[in-house]
Image (cartoon, helix red, strand yellow):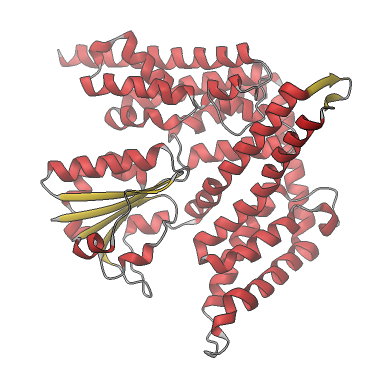
Length: 465
């Protein structure tokens, strides 16, 4: 049997490649021919050829966002599955391909139950967030470097007088400015394709412009998310119109963009702009109030840390991430600071645990421990996934508690982060306000998790002996 696959996670970093490796390992173990294409942050790798697609018996699409060029698989038997499910249950899924696969027709798509769950609002939001992340990270790093090197502290805050570093700061601001239309555009794109990009991206710029809306503040992330869904489903409806053949070619390049921008922008200017702007403003005030109060700040830190660790790069993780990003843009980088403290804890904890007590881990896990440590240092939470997949009952509680400890300490110490990323790397790049305390939060959280894992695994071994 010949199997081909495509993997794609929201960030296009770790999950994408872990899922591909799982499919390949399991298929080869069962004696099947296999090739998996990865659609990661570096682009498409190991790309499937038309001949390979033609000769394949089954196609596995493991993705939490819309994949590129899905139409290639028209007429093939497809199983669509979430990244999390293929990592955890690759053996069962591949053994049952014959029963679970659905014949894919581009114009009359049928999907299985798991695919239906993943084609929901969360998946569309993740598609927007995954495309937005590089813009925010680059923008944040440029701003952080400009402030750290060219900034001069004054009674009014940090001021950049150097012409060069002021340019660097302006480039960073452009990255932040672009993230709004990118978020809205790719939410819409995941719903109805390229024709929705112009309505979503232009309307997003309208939604964040106080001058156009006639409000004191823009609608921020909330407005752009609303724009993304509105544009996506509006264009999807427009695509269903029965129009004469002579008009069809100009629909995606003239009619749909013109009507889409007009309708959605008008809705925000006349109806939605003021209430969404009010909601966004008050949400940020509420988060700011929580972070300023010690008891509520600790509670907020615990919640953010748990969200980061519970699915390591999945939808819950992205909720915490988006809260952090939204807070940075609204001038409250402490929320992102707490999230940044929690992000590296799971992989660092697993790597430390394999060094503290090698006897409770397999040879394969001990090897994965080194790579987990490296991934933790650069803020890739997914480095802990192989351990959590193998022993979720012990690993998940440990990393959730450790991440919550790190995040709540971040709130106590008022750690800020101007870059939507985490791990020691952002501290060394100057994105945080206090590097020693930032590293201390991460170290304590990682040690708590590592010790919990070792203790729980020791108890397991004693029960077995």
